[in-house]
Length: 141
Image 1 (tube, helix red, strand yellow):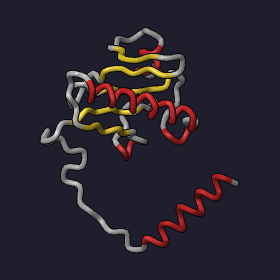
Image 2 (cartoon, rainbow, N blue to C red):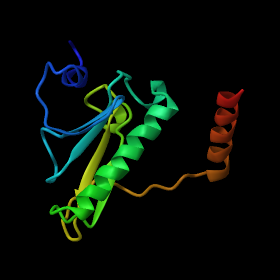
Image 3 (cartoon, rainbow, N blue to C red):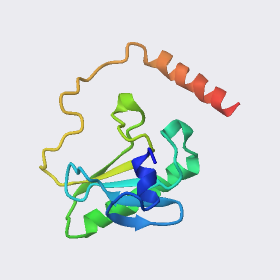
Image 4 (cartoon, helix red, strand yellow):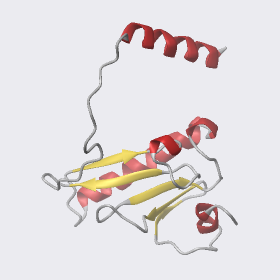
């Protein structure tokens, strides 16, 4: 099996499971950036957000919210959480089976997802909005 997450879902690759239902699985990240870093993935293989059904994405977020709440209420003592989907290689996706990162955070932990990020200005925000509105209208047509 070429997809490591599909192998995990099938029980052919090891993972520490923290939640499972008929359609989703939540596992501890094997290279966590903080303690309690969880990956939520659909059991059915999709590559990225563009080919994942909206209900599946909603399920990822629903489960991610529960994991985030558990991280706050447990002995992990999270003050907050980052919920992130890296969508495509340009967005740092390295496993091409869509998944949601739930990363517990503590005030003062100095973890930065955007370290070194330069703030940029859109030269024509109205034109950008028009591009996106037109593309959304085409998707709805």
